[in-house]
Length: 446
Ligand code: UDP
Image (cartoon, rainbow, N blue to C red; front, side, top):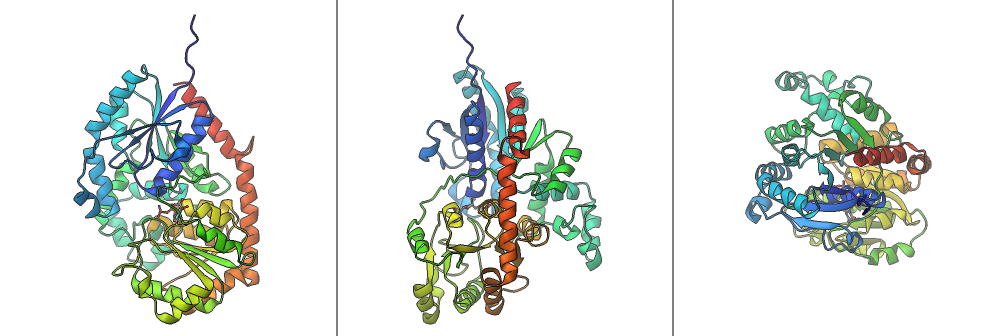
């Protein structure tokens, strides 16, 4: 008798943006290494199929449901709301074709929490589904806590400063003010998408790209409150870059002294005011430390890029700085010349920095990044935050403190200890290792 094919297929549905695609592809690699076949369903854009490292995966792209005007003209949240509204029908066709193609052998649909349209299709086909939250566990906790509050009353309560600063339950450093969305524009669309994200539909588990030793309180809270399995199996850690990276900066780093360079990147979405960028530039120049700075095209508001810098700043940059449009971030953070990371504290960047034992200067833009920054500063104690307006004196002081002072050395030491803890959690018997095993066992029973 012919042996039954044991490889089972997992369908992954990422959000089409770098910060979400990377961890989803990393999860795909982890599951592929455990014997599962992977199909990636791309929505709106054909982003990932060209990446050679995933040549063993099947890629399927749904027909575009939104015009480029609808994509470019709206913020992230509006885009996601529209995408969810318009992708269900084509996803249904896609899943029925995949079931035919693979002889019904789909073990599970794993979808990004922001691609919640997948939930109803999984239910319709009676397929198991699992949600993947690519942000921090604490951020998820904050949304869950918020969803249980009377939002109108809460908004009134938040006018009281004492209430804003109050810690949520025993979840230090999560404060009530952190429950409110900030930095996304109008509140209503954000609240709408949050309601969708906390609704688990028929999903049987949620995966988090974190580990207990980073967010023990939040992971325990989620295990207790969600009522479905929680797999904290991170940090997942490989690059899946969607854009070309400037490798020239590695040669430049090779010429710098150990732990002397400050690496600056605010991720793939955040935009900065011209004034703020200029203050940063002056502060970096005045710090006398070498710096590697990612300035994405379009990331400086009301400007085309680095031509905003006055001659004096441009001169210092040519002597002591290196500017790129896109850096190979993991390689950069791994480099022995890098002494600190100025970050917007996106969850991927936060994890990548800890995995390499690099302390941070935090300058968060949005609510989830603010929560990550609070952890970096007051739980792990591996960074400092620039508060209030960005001014050159503060920038200079923060860079010097992190790279040159004893305080910075302490942060680096703690970051290195945390790095080892993360490694241990991924090794056989560690909590993330066991969580991945648990997920694999669950998927094997489907
Ligand atoms: N990234 C990179 N090179 C850059 C800028 C960003 O490789 O020049 C990667 C970075 O390593 C991280 C991701 O882009 O994996 C950004 O994700 P994060 O969650 O930190 O922030 P987001 O872009 O989603 O705000």
